[in-house]
Length: 196
Image 1 (cartoon, rainbow, N blue to C red):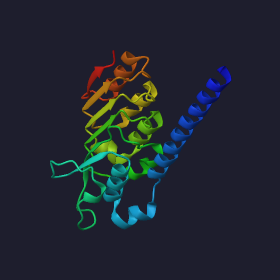
Image 2 (image 1 turned 30 degrees about the vertical axis):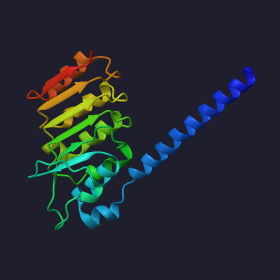
Image 3 (image 1 turned 30 degrees about the horizontal axis):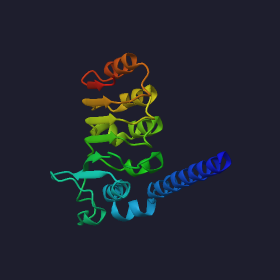
């Protein structure tokens, strides 16, 4: 009976590993950057398509409504719709897709909440994008278990960041030093913590 039980458990864990492996592969496909598509439709449209494909939402400049339906994205002349806000709650965006953000000029808000693929390299990449350094004003990082102090410190390059909300980040080990470094680099930054 013990052998049968161990065999069933082994098959169950193998099935679970296969399922996770499949979803990880599929999410990587969703994050693949198509540079020809970016040239054809412009950076904002291509980024919106990427974000919605991965389960995120976008809000365009001049609109109150969030778009989350890929097929419902507005159409119009190239460059007409500029992304102003990104809500990546529970999305599968990952580092591989962050090249989509390079041409965005008007993003003021980003929310990363319960994003299992967001890690330090993502925050470092985001912070190195010159347009983001100028436009990004508000950011939330919530329940992203792969984010550590290193990733948060990289946000000091976002010169116009005025509000940063941090919650449920078990990878943050030295929050006083991390927040202190951010506030020294960005004196106008309001950091709100819920890390206990």
